[in-house]
Amino acid sequence: MTALTVGGPRPFVGRIRVPGDKSISHRALMIAALGRQRCTIQGLSDGDDVTHTRLAVEALGARVEDHGSGGVTVSGGLTGASDPIYLGNSGTGIRLLTGLVAGYGFTTTLDGDASIRRRPMDRIIEPLSAMGASVRGSGEGGTLAPLKVQGRTLRGIDYTLPVASAQVKSAVLLAGLRAEGPTTVREPAPTRAHTEEMLADAGVRVECGDGSVTVWPGDVEPPHLIGIPGDPSQAAFWLVGACIAPDSDLTVENVYLGSARGGFVDVLARMGADITVDSDSGDIRARTSELRATHVTADELPGCIDEVPILAVAAAAAEGVTVFEGIAELRVKESDRVAAIIEMLNVLGAESEIDGETLAVSGDGRLGGGTVDSHGDHRMAMAAAIAGAAGSAPVTVEGFEATATSYPGFARDLSRVTGWTP
Ligand code: S3P
Image (cartoon, rainbow, N blue to C red; front, side):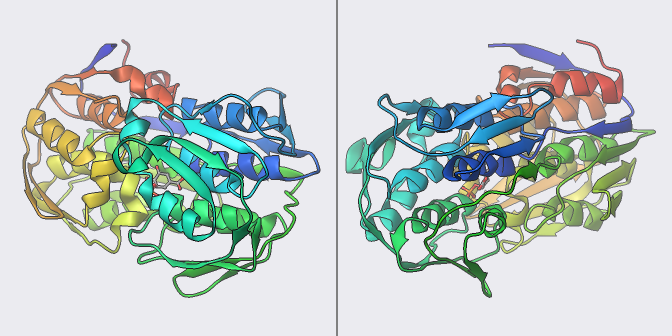
């Protein structure tokens, strides 16, 4: 395990680009793999999660050729994989691919690392089984990875998600591409809409209603070129750092600004952050700000679900009690993020309290330091490192290597933005 110590406070300055959006990258590879014509993808995320999805679609029969600087060309067509497919740490990879292969005439085994083997898969097994899929999990109740998917004839369903989850929505929609009749998914709160948007761009009949999406089976004809903008979830780390650290003025360029991904900007703006979004270029600029507490409601949480670790750092650096409602889903992410966030806040000197599904963080305007365990979770590692760089006391991040899951160049970019050297 690699431990890294980051000391501050250091101004966050300049202009930076973050890796291509991770959620869009997974879907671009999968949708391209379903098509018959060649599809070039520019700006693919260079994180380990997306590399696993690339290897997965190759194992399933697609051809993926590199042509430098994050560009690949995919020639689609799935024939099936004889060996188990390993998705590493990626919940998006394993859940979406399970739906994607469920209607094909071959058997696929999907697996991942120790964290993936702990994460709930019943949430996809249940709707996919209702479509006629055969998905057998492991463990008690058969609800954990590895998952064995035996291809079956599927029928469309009308499914109401019990939890707001883009991964479950997407698994069902991708299965719907090979089902008989339309498939509708209804969601309790808006979640990222990449799958429905990208399927529509690939010529699939898709209809979006108020809180519902319907897909019809049919051929997938991906565009010749998919360009992937920067990942807002990665941008959030630098922007929060710039709000907290003195003398900061930082712009993250070309960030994805679509639905259910930019909730953290609204939360920061309510906290008094000096943050502006250029909706033409996708550039987001943040400057040093006096942060104050805010209230994040359960309805808005899915729109900033991956940003809660870094928003918790902002809350610790703000004056007053910041409340995050509806945090239950954070317990089943790459780590138990509720426990990991409370542990991190403790090290940073902020008090936190849990009441049911609500987390309250009491900040006093300054961040303390110490040692934070990433628990193998990329977003916890990056949140803690930003706290070290922006705050006044050094933070040692144990398990820093977890950053490679989504942002292998994070330490390099930390040096670029703050001048910090390891
Ligand atoms: C994702 C959906 C979210 C998010 C994850 C990526 C996606 O998960 O936390 O990092 O790409 O669909 P849930 O669907 O489990 O909320």
